[in-house]
Length: 324
Image (cartoon, rainbow, N blue to C red; front, side, top):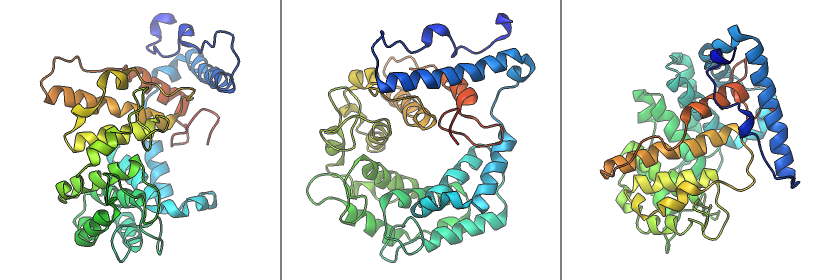
């Protein structure tokens, strides 16, 4: 049986070891690991099922198309995240190479256009104030549709005016919305929007690289703003922003590679926020001609964790085995 098992992730030696010191997070980590091992062991006991563990393409496609058309009432709390829901589904369907029906494409374009603010940018829903996060999601969704009508719906002039107005007048950060917070998300969102639709990034990026690098902590990761705890999502946004500006060389590279967020439990979303950083680093090292072995982490093991611990047999992915 052992020779038939291609997985490497579920090994006893990799279980959490808290050295006998109790903390709430270590206890929760152990509980999650028990669920993961239980899932894995059930697959091992059914080798035919185990051999077929892969991404459930058709089930995920059906899940995404269903929710793109009509989400249940439980999603009402995401009323200010409508462009995000469209982007998540459209982007995932694009990755899965699933053809989106024409009527669905038109409905998405109509909804996102309704979220566009008269003064530029997009709100989280129709009639809401412009905010950089749903603006990013709206633009990325429209681009992902690969549709001329979708691209033409973007008012580039008012969008660029909105981005310029979001820039802090002194340092290089951006407001998430007028009168709102300034954090790492906004810098990445603004720069990525410029890059993807061809707006003049140079007019926006003065001082931004310096502001981003001021958020790298003594641990190596990046916080949402200077002097805050490093966080996986903010670290991705920081690295990606610096790559977009061709300023990655400012990073304390060695400490970044060593970093891991203290007491952070494994979860599905960190598979992206942390995992997506490595291809960026690979690309930067290759572009600068440095002698560098690609693949700083074992992507196969991350894939195994995602398939066994996060994938629902009914379609869609979850944070952990006991989540929705």
